[in-house]
Amino acid sequence: MLPATLKSDFPILGETVNGRPLVYLDNAATSQKPRAVLDASRHYYEAVNSNIHRGTHFLARAATAAHEAARETVAAHLNANSPDEIIFTSGTTDSINLVSDILPLSPGDEILISALEHHANIVPWQMLAERTGAKIVVIPCDENGVLDQAAFVNLLSEKTKILALTWVSNAFGTVNPVREMTAAAKRYGAIVLIDAAQAIPHMAIDVRELGADFIVFSGHKVYAPTGIGVLWGRLDLLKSLPPWKGGGEMIKEVTFESTTYNDPPFKYEAGTPNIEGAIALAAALDYVNAIGIDSIHSHEQELIAAAAAALSEIPGIRLYGPPERIGALSFAIEGVHHYDLGTLIDQMGVAVRTGHHCCQPLMARFGITGTTRASFALYNTMEDIESLATAVKKASMMLR
Ligand code: PMP
Image 1 (cartoon, rainbow, N blue to C red):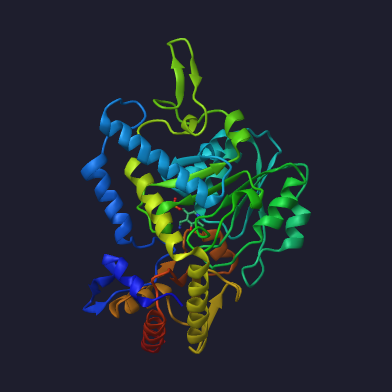
Image 2 (cartoon, protein in one colour; image 1 turned 90 degrees about the vertical axis):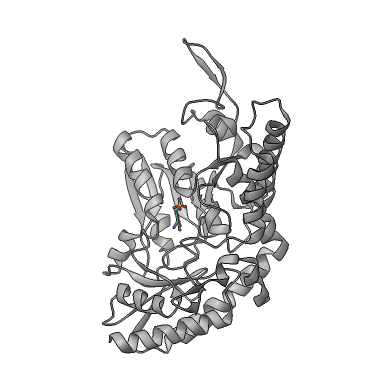
């Protein structure tokens, strides 16, 4: 287990809620920020703030250097071949929309997604399908929330142009075998995008080993601020695909007659970016790496196993997702509405998420409107798990 003293790195975790110390178990929605990240943001505005890339003065050069150093930190964290493969976006949603807007498709082409996807990895593809006459095809999952691999293989064909797949389900914590699935889709020449929003805080990501074309995530899930995210893309694709948003920074030369476009990553970074966010994201990744992502992973796995064991004792409870889940533990108690449960345990100082978790099709697959979800981060402790179990037991007795 990681030391419980890590909590003190996160000022907000010292707050009380309803007179009780905050037990924060809504990390899949967003993580809390360590002092190292808050300091990086503050330092940027106090000592560095300037617009980047175009200025010749001291601050412009310092801000540019810090922003591009942040890109290098992200590239190193992902084991990318080059920082040019790292495009800063506002988050996972933005990154997926970027890709879905630039990929060319024809009527009859198929976009393969899965039953586990977040709305952010469904709706942009539906919009692309609507624009182009392509078709959305869905890989089904079983009762444990595990994708049906036989069905997946059967759904692959020459028509499959895109596989857009989450690595870890935000709703159930299911970990998809993305490496194998990517390799299978690649045999048909499909473009593969992996939604790593729920993978990035919990495991090492090696983009070279994975073999996908695009990997996307949000900074705020990995201890960085909101409003910053990443699109990693294969450089040859980023070079050959058309630009997305037009404006400053993404151009080489503009005349009223025509424009030539900049090289990646700048080709996809029109306008003034979230400079402070990129710098704070790098600080967050440095913080994670100082602790060690593998240590974080095993710490969280112990917590989630303990939570699953403790909650299993509650009469009428159903846990969703397979036992090998990562990051998130979803459950429902017979006869108890998830909203009532969430509200009641909040009064006991325990913050969890209730509802459909932006996965309405997945909830429909299970015939439910939502679940209660506890989700874990490096700063959670066994005491947090005890507080969760005690609160859920108490609340379910009151509500049943
Ligand atoms: N995909 C997954 C798997 C997620 O968990 C989330 C956030 N809940 C998103 C996409 C969207 O992320 P964002 O709202 O930061 O763009």
